[in-house]
Length: 427
Ligand code: FAD
Ligand code: NDP
Image (tube, rainbow, N blue to C red; front, side, top):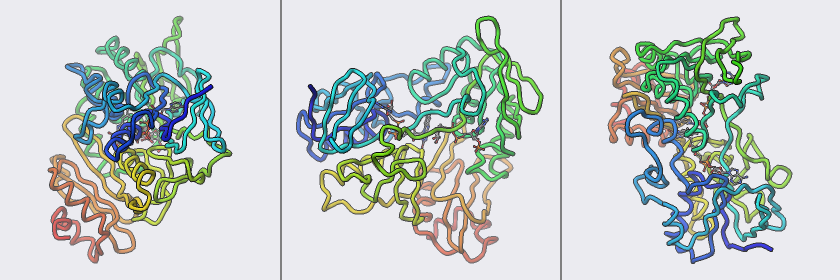
């Protein structure tokens, strides 16, 4: 026995929420759309979990950050889904999918069939065990991917005041959690294998501004090494972190942010997988014409770079979701997804945005000394391909975004550096 829907969204994260809103705006009828999610709550803005959610004073809590408040749009609570005739199946894992038969099998044993499926399963956090380190199940070792992780982290933070935290990983989770831990009066040591934080995006010069600020806030950096094992007490709580370089760091709390893997396993052998994600065309349609993929799990053509990419950022989840719904409901009117990659972060009073691709030659501009307003351009084959700006206004960010999208020619790198933001303003 089972239920049948015209549209099914598998996964209830950011992409699912934005897709649901788009479906209602394009006129879905009662009972046509079902969202099935392992999480026990309606789709929410995941970025809040490493920011407002971890604040010691007046932390953000649901329902305040359900999608689509992150795009200054409607807040979709469970009631909203009910009022719009959308079946929201929560706390339910899908354990298998039969793409040929167009059916999903849930962990409760229910079969759900679809005419169109949108895969929005996102990603899972990489575990230390995948690098040969045991101990992820200790009560004070925290990952951060979903609400239950965030609740656990918030609880451990509360019981670790004035204690020591070791943050493993110098990427987005590491940097944002380290800032939140400092705000919660916890002593932080960050450990990562690279020479500086955010190594895949930041240049050494950009990274040094943030690292200097973190250091001034008491954060210690241990670079060029990884952890090798944990020390435990008799309750199996971690008490210290052993590093490959032979050093040991005391720990009341460990936060691990060492990357993610997209949740593709239900589709392996059924759909084409590329660069770790489900391969889709410029309409977000997979190798099966009834199945679409959006967000972190989708590898799509990024037209501006002429390359297939998988992105792990909220803006691409939101926009790919809207595009997929448009392509399903109005295929003739839907063109190619023409997306400019956009990343951002907010830590302490810092706020930066990046557009494009961080490849080629880099030129820095602005005030690196005071650390308030500075940026960088990336130039490849004589054209601007990437722009970074810290401390800009809304207009400044729009300016660098528009300029990067146009890939203007750059003839003189030195001049570009001295013009700085002015260069983008003239495009
Ligand atoms: P997700 O939002 O991860 O949703 C996937 C959903 O699918 C989940 O609900 C999951 O439970 C469900 N699911 C998976 N498998 C199954 C299954 N078999 N059955 C049922 N349900 C399933 N990006 C930014 O650009 N800026 C930020 O500041 C930022 N901050 C972030 C902070 C944190 C703590 C995290 C974890 C991520 C952050 N990101 C940020 C990344 C951004 O949140 C993701 O890119 C975005 O959530 C991807 O959306 P998605 O819909 O593809 O997947
Ligand atoms: P990232 O990929 O950003 O960073 C992972 C970091 O961990 C890298 O510095 C990586 O180094 C390092 N690392 C890898 N293996 C080890 C190891 N064994 N020991 C120590 N360090 C290691 O992933 P995160 O976990 O930080 O973030 C998870 C997801 O959440 C990403 O998709 C991210 O986009 C998203 N997110 C985005 C935010 C934002 O956009 N503002 C905020 C928070 C999360 P190396 O590069 O050498 O592999």
